[in-house]
Length: 316
Image 1 (cartoon, helix red, strand yellow):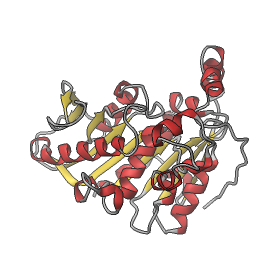
Image 2 (image 1 turned 120 degrees about the vertical axis):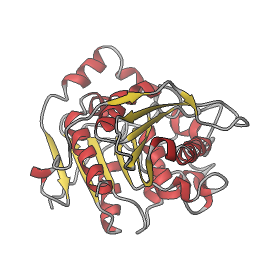
Image 3 (image 1 turned 90 degrees about the vertical axis):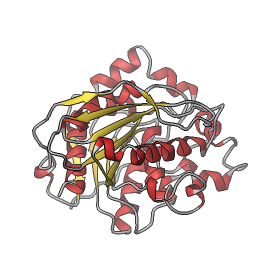
Image 4 (image 1 turned 135 degrees about the horizontal axis):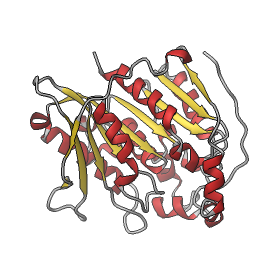
C-alpha cells in the first residue's frame, strides 16, 4: 500500500474571495487543470481499482416524490432511479446528496452519478435537503435520516435490501453522508430521527470537508453551525466526520483534488489515515492537478473506481 503526504496552502472554506475565483475564467482554468493523471492510494492493487464494475443495465427514472413527512418544516423531494429487473431479487440502494456549501444547488448535480449507480443495479435516491442560513446543523442530517426512513418504507416495492444501502456525496453532500454513516445511528446525532434505519453499508465521498475545526470562521461554516469555532466549539466537533470515526465505521472510498484550496487535501489524507488507524476498509483516490470544482466536473475515473469499490462491498 502506498502512502502520500501532501502539504497544501490553506484557503478558507466559505470565503467570498474563493467563490469569486471559481467563476468565469477561474472556472475554466479549474476545468482545464484536470486533464491529467490521478494517483490512487489504496489497500489493494491500483491496477484492479475498477474490477467491481458491471455492464450497465437499463433503468427507469421516476417522477420526483416528497420523501419527508407532512409535518416536516419543509417538503423535500427525491428522484428515484429504479433498475429494470424482473427476477424479484433484492438489490442495493444508494442515497445521493449534492454539494453547495449546505446552502444551494440541486439534486441535478448528482444526476449523472445516480444514472451510473442505477446502471450498476442500485436503486438510486437523489435528494434535496434544507439550506442554511434558515436551517442550521443538525437539520440537514435530520433530512438524510428521513430519507433513509423513506427508503426503508419503500423497500418492498423497490426490491431494496436494506442491509445494502450506501451513501454518495460530494463536498457538503459528502460531509452529510459521512456524518450520517458515522454518527447517525448511535449517539447524540441519532436522536430523534436516526437509529438502525440510518445505517449505511459503505460511503463514496468526494471533496469531503472532514474536520470543520480546520477552517477559519468563514461564512459557509459559521452559517451552517450558527456561530464561530470559539462560540460553538462542541457543535463543530460533533459536526466533523473526522471526529466521529470508530472501529464500527463502514467502508469508505474517498476522492479529492490535490490542488483543492477550498477544502484542502489534508481533509482527505488525515481522514483516510484515521480510518486506517481504526482498521476500516478504505481507499483514497487523489486527483492530480485538480481543484475542488474540477475534481467533481472531471470525476470520471474517480467515480468509476468509487462505484467499483461500493460494488465490492455490497454485492455478494
